[in-house]
Each structure stands twice: as structure tokens, then as C-alpha cells.
Image 1 (cartoon, rainbow, N blue to C red):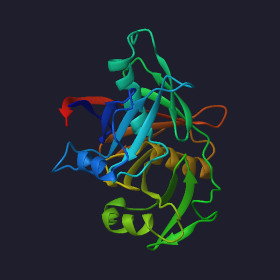
Image 2: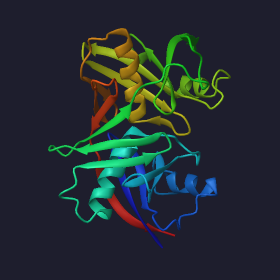
Image 3: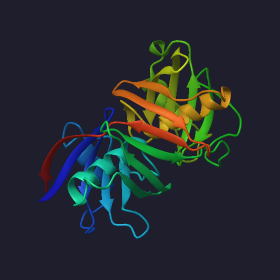
Length: 265
């Protein structure tokens, strides 16, 4: 039997496993898909194996619900930080800053006094082989593209409620313009610093929130309005908060919650 923990960040949920001994088998995608299945498994948007790292406090080995590898996950890395502090690091009360290694590089995570976590997600990339360099009309919606370690298609729309992201999401994700598929975010302006969001995640489907997606949205909005400071992004699962430091790196702030623990075969 193997112990696991269930975490979520703004409703984006993950199976967390301490895999520092590398005993968990990730060779078979069916195994990961079964665990993430919401009817026949534990149920989650992804699986995170917390492993040892020579360069950081730990390595976040992240897999989407369909068993595919993911480069980065903004909600997942906050959950990784909380899991590491609660169940792995013995001096957790003294440690308020973590370095977490990911496939998109090492990220700094700060544990805030209010219990939230802030992640330095790095500088957005607007030119990448994974997507077109110019805006593109897809499903009659104009999308812009940015990478936060993984590719995102972002569109600002007038009325988000009128668009069925479950219908257009998979079509855009698998469009021929994107050799490695793509994440999709729809954004509606509520106020100057408040926006509603719908998400379709590559390899997962509709999710209640997306951390890298939130950063991608901020990057696109900031490009249009350079005076923008911290904004609130309202997802179905809760709010995430985005800002930028002096170096142009995006800071993602939000919750990380432990839901339950259990054992699996």
C-alpha cells in the first residue's frame, strides 16, 4: 500500500505522493489515468510526485490526468510547497521560502502570513515554437499566445457565459497550429483589476482554475496595459492574484489546501 494526499489550489486538485524513494511506477500512463479518474479512482486534475533534487528543496514531478508529462503547474507548485512543509520538512515552522525544481526550471515559493503561497513564475515568453507568433482567429474568437513554461492561448471576450469552453476547448487544444497541443483561457473584464476566467487545460479538460493560465492571462493583459499592477482573476474554484516584480517576473499568489489522505495499492 502507498500513502497519498489530496490537495487543491482554487479547486485545481492533485494527488500528492512522497516519491523520494522513487518507488512509484510512472511508466504506465493507464496507472496515472486510473488514479485521476473521478469515478473509478481517487479523482484529480493531475498527479504530483514530490522527489529529491540536488538543486532545490524538492522536485515537482507532475503528470496531467491523462498521464502526459506537464512542464509546469502554478496551482500544483503551491500544493507541493504546502505538502513539503507539512509532511516532509521537519523544521517547517522556520522555513518560509522554498526552491522547487520543475521541468520549467527552479521556482521560488514564499509562505505568506495569511497562509497563502506566492510563486515567482518567471518571465513570460511571447515567441515560441509551440504556437504562432501573431494573434489567430480560432472558433471565431481572437487568441493571443504566451508560454509560462507551457503554451497558452488567451482570449478576452465580452460575455464569458455565452461561450461553451467544453465545446471549443478540445478543438483549440488539438488544432494543427499547436504541435504539442495548448491550454485555453477565456477572460471577461469585470473591473479594471478584476476578471472572470474559464479554463480548458491540455491533457485534462475543464478545470476550476489554472495557475500557469492565470500567469498567461496577466502577461497578455499587462502587454496591453503596462500600468496594471495586482489583479484578481476569478475562477470557478476561487480567486488567484497576479502581480509583477521589478524584473518583469510574474508573481502568482493563492491558496493551497489539504483535503484528505489515504492509501492506494
